[in-house]
Length: 243
Image (tube, rainbow, N blue to C red; front, side, top):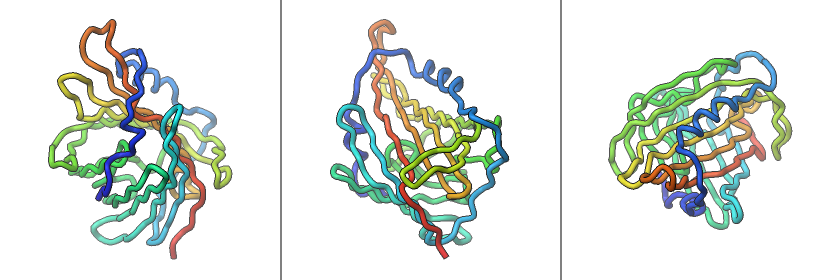
């Protein structure tokens, strides 16, 4: 469970004039990674003790920085438990995500560190990750405060590329993820997440994640503003496999 509120910089709203979020969705679809073709990427074979360390930053002029650890705590008939720890000068957060199987998220975060429960589990990744393949779905979820809602989730698999990270360079396949959250208010639209994630089979996890999110104020289309709430990079720093 989250011990602390979402990362402060991600809630520091950065205002910019812009188009409605749906325009960002269309542009994102045109920006699919198509570096080169490659084989389908199989689901990872996870073991208790698998551990991935990441370096992360979020923001623009004064970004928040932190180290993030994702560690497999247990694997049993109920699924896979992964502890996610975020530590930095302005970040202190721990949560446990639960996966029914690799790619099937039963409880975890889509934006910041807000943990949601999904019944049935959300098909976060559709293995094997095959270039040109995409999926779109509506997923019922429960918020930390008990509210129920429905998100719209879309993912498209692109091409392969060599991705440089602090841990080294890895052959990885890119997956563009677009999410329309269920957080609309009378004064603002729902949040649109636009993420590009690079999965490396040799590592068994993502090696780089580029994350942006925004919503727009309601009102006069000619004067309403777009509020950017996330602009993050998460890169692999090291990893080790369990026994």
